[in-house]
Image 1 (spheres, rainbow, N blue to C red):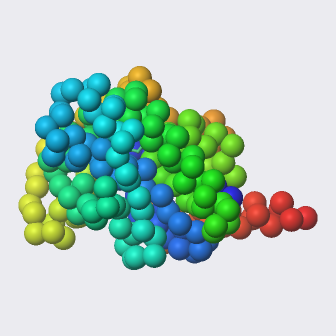
Image 2: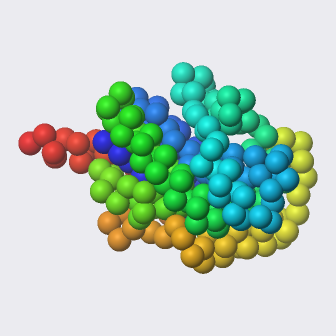
Length: 228
Ligand code: DC
């Protein structure tokens, strides 16, 4: 069973995907972390603004997840980079990996392989990103598309930053979110899009538990229907 969750930044998909995966007892694949890891490597290797070099390098990198740890580790060439890939600097440059067609080709291939392995070893996987239901797993068992009003997504981001002791301006964060949406939606390869057969959930007025309950109920109902 493959469950895909796509949606824009701040739609709540990461937290929901993590919780849903736990309830289903399967691994959770954060594909954004893979694009971030390629961007971090490009930064460290001073390859930014050199798409050919970033594409070539992506084919050589080892990117692994250790799901035995909670939260899972993301290992870039053997080193855990879970915190480094989430710095504002890496967030700012990740488009250089996400817009790169060679990087996308390579990561899509790897995501499918991880999916195959997870189905064999764990019976399934919950994967989240922008193109999981459309491009990577068009035949996924369940597909969800999460969204929320941009103002609410900006407020969530402010709360995350405040939890880290960082104060930020709501309007500035809102503009950043709108810019990221535009970039994600207009990407030539693998843009953010809702698969026609995905179940849409507007998370604006929902708690995390409510979102996860909704998804779990659909998966549960679907799995039960398959058995009858
Ligand atoms: O989900 P995130 O914010 O960690 O993703 C980081 C960036 O990678 C974001 O700009 C969108 C991009 N991304 C993508 O293009 N395709 C995916 N499957 C996942 C993320």
